[in-house]
Length: 235
Length: 388
Image 1 (tube, rainbow over the protein chains, first blue to last red):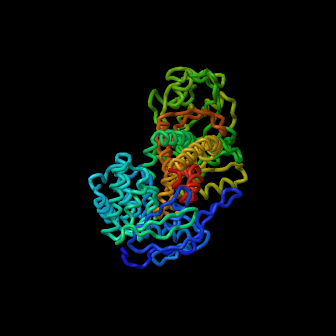
Image 2 (image 1 turned 180 degrees about the vertical axis):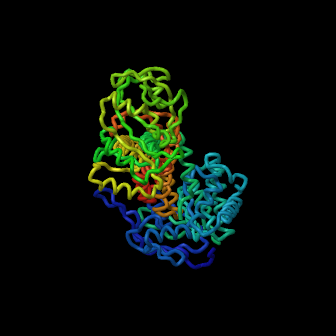
Image 3 (image 1 turned 60 degrees about the vertical axis):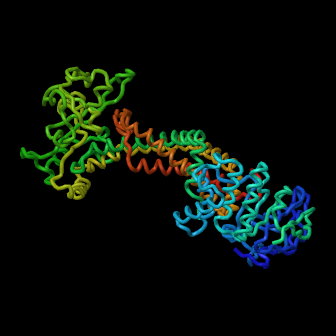
C-alpha cells in the first residue's frame, strides 16, 4: 500500500459527453484533481452530476472523451481494452451499491473470483479469500451463498472481494445505498478501518452525508464541475 | 484467464426447470438421430455378418444381387473345377450351387403379403455358413418338397411354423426345421433342396455359386480368372463385400432420411437452446458487468456462456443416447430395396453412432449458444452494471 503525500490518482482535463440521439449531454468538463495515496475521498453531488461517471473513468470501466487519468504511474486513458482488463484485475477493488455478488457462488468463491486472474494456486487462492473474509468478520459464513446472507453481510463479502487482490485503489459507488442504518454504519466503519489501518486509497461516491462524514476529503460535483477539496477529517 | 467452470455449471443447476426442458428438447432430437443411425448400422451389420470373408460368391456380371442373377449349369460346373476351392473333411469340395427365388407370404400382424427369400441349397451350403444352426426339427431331405425356415420368419409371418405347409411354386412344402442364423440375413430366409426348387419354379439356371477358398489370399487371382474367362460372363465377390453392397442403398436411404428429419427437428431444439441462453444473458447482465469490472476479458465471458450452452448440448446428447440405447432391444423388419425381400434386423449402437450423436448434440449447443455468448461478451461494462 502506498501511503505518502504523492498523488496516486492524477486526473488532467478530463471531459466526458454522452450522446443521446441528436443531443450531446456534457457530463464532465475539464476536470483536474489529484487523489493522494492513502486518501479516503468522498464525491458528492446531485443525481446526474457525473460523480458515478467520474468513478467509472477512474476505475477503468468507461472511456473519457479527452484528458488523462494516471493511476500509480499508469496512463490508463491510453490503454487498450485488454490492457485495461488486466490493469483493473491488479489495481482496482470495486464495491457496488447492490453488492453485485455472484448468486451461484459461495461467499468464499465470490471472494476468490478475482484471484482467478492471478497466478495463485487453488490452495493459495482459498487461503487468501479466507483471510479476506476473516478481515470482514465473515469467516464463519464462507460457505453460505449470497441469498443466505443479509444485505450488510453481502456488502462485507463484496468488500472482502474488493481487497483480496490488495488493489491500488478501492472504488465504492453508493456502498451504503441499499443498507439500513446499522448495516451502513458497519460498512462505513469497515471502510474507515481499511483506510486507517491498511492505508488503502478509497474513492467513494455517495448521496449520504453520514457516509461522506467518514471520508477524509470531500469534493462536490455539480453539472460536471468539481469543487475544491474540503479536508474534513485531517490525518 | 477463464471464469471458473463451476460458475457455468451452477447456473445451469440454478435454472433447473429451463435446463431440463432444453436438455429434453435436445435429447429428443439426438434420440431420433441416433436411432436412425442405429437402424442403418443394424441393417448393415446384419447383412455384412451374413457373409463370411473366406467365402466367394459368383453371380452374373452386372446383376448386383442373387435375385437378378443367373448362372448356367455349364458355367457352374466350370466354377466347381477351380483348384482354389477348399476341400472339406469328407474329401468333397466346399462349393454349393444355389437358387434364390422370392415368394409372397402374408404377415402375421397385418395379413398383408410380403416378399421372402426362398433359397435352394445343396449339402455344403450349411457347412459354408457356420452361423446357421438348426434349433428345431431336422434338415430338409434331398429330393423332397421340404424346407426349413429362419427363426425371424416364425413370429412375423402367418403359417411359418414347424410341421406346417407353405404353398409356393405350385407345390406344398412341409416345414421340417427351424434354424437360427443369429443376427444375419439368412435368419429371414427359407431353405430347401435346390433341385426341387428349380423344378417347382421352372428355373433352368442357378442364381449363384458359393465356395470357400482354400487360402483367402487367393481371392484376387480367382476373381481375375473368372472375369477374364470368355466362357463365363460372371463376377466373383467376397461374400462380405457382396452383402455390404446389398445394404448400401437401404442404409444410405435411412441415413439421408434420418439426417433430413433430424436437421428439421434440430432447428427447433437449437432455437430452444438459443432462447434459454438469451434468457440467461438477459437475467445475468449485472453479473456480466461485474465479471468484466473485476478484470475478466470479453473472451472469458464468451467462453463461460458458450460452456453453458455446450454443457446443455452434451447433457442433451447423453440423455438422447440413453433413450436411444433401449432401441437395441427391438428388432424391425423391412423390405430391402435391393433384394425386394423382407429382412429382420436389430438397431445397432456403435461407437461411431455415439461419436456422431455427441458431435451433433454439441453442435446444436454451439449454434444455440454462440450468438447469445457473443452478445454477452460485447456488452459495455457500465451498461451491464446498470442492469441491477
